[in-house]
Length: 285
Image (cartoon, rainbow, N blue to C red; front, side):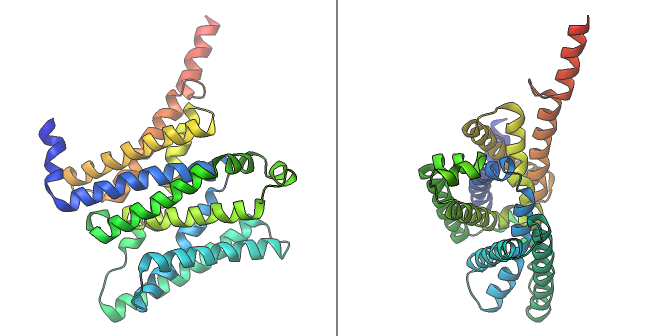
């Protein structure tokens, strides 16, 4: 058993990959909790797909790809707010419009870049955590520290804003800036997760651990804590499955997280389908 755990750690690429996987599992669960509670999963999906044009443009300009991705995600968020606030189009429709437009532009630009430069950028779609470099590990850790510090220092304000936006506005909290800060945190989390799971699967890692925790506990800080545990275990387990069974790392991580959700969905003490069925049978006897 010990050899099973230690063998992958003999390789530098696995050490770097596990560090990134753990960090991504933590920040996705923390930020994803706000997304799930506010029912903003579609927004996370829209921003994740909208970073692609930034990736391609940053590559063309020989610029930091992660900064390019973040800028593209921020622009998409501004576009969504602009469309929904300056017209009668609802926010979910605005998300769909921006998400599809940016994603189509990103795919087009990536196709052009790959054709002219003979380089594969598809790992940004599906993730390629095994190829992370030391600088990418450093950037991911710095990004994660920034995200966690923001959540720590503004936890009470974000808590109030999350459950009662009108109430937060009435007591004088800067709702607009809290909204913008949350969008930035989502964008940073998605950018940090690009190499781990890619833009296609990042939404699952954002939502699934938090949704799993929501079935088990109720308070926001508890959902975050349990979600972090699920996210970290899923990330580590997915990496080991990827190493020993030659599976794609991003999908392996997501499948493990989904397995935890299914287990909670069936056996949650308060909401599990099978648990409720057993309780009903006991009461009817």
